[in-house]
Image (cartoon, rainbow, N blue to C red; front, side):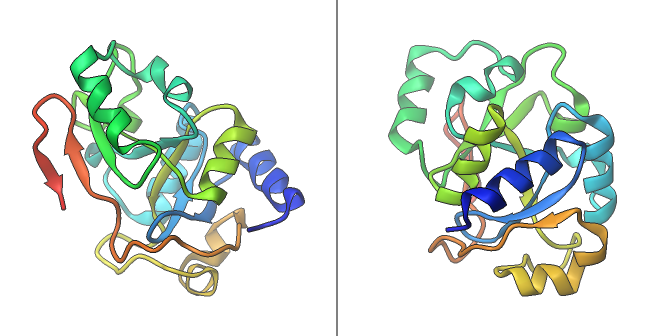
Length: 185
């Protein structure tokens, strides 16, 4: 686990509009403030990912991302509680006004309440969600360690927070909250 100093440094950089890399449940993620359009655009440029695809926002708790979501019914809340905190990403209907730099061409937002200690500590310290997309250029395999991130993207990032990734072999599964359908296994 990175020290409190390194967590603080990473969150200060995010707050100032920076793009960071950090460990998650399966791979390193690229992150920035989801409310900062310039930071998100820069992250998308680094990753070479089209804006239309949308992004995942991780959080330490649902309250950190509720402003981006339609009200969630009892049945759907039950689904979330069964898997969160944990390595399950859900597509949740987005509230009107949720920035399209987060949702892309979709009417949902991909959200995960993470249980990875580093990612969770970042969100807690920020007090809000954090963009989370795999640390790699689109169509390349995601990085699973800080050295690979540095080699692949280091000059373009503002900070790399070193730490171990979780035990998942692949990026987290994605499911649709309303239908329950698996989008990515």
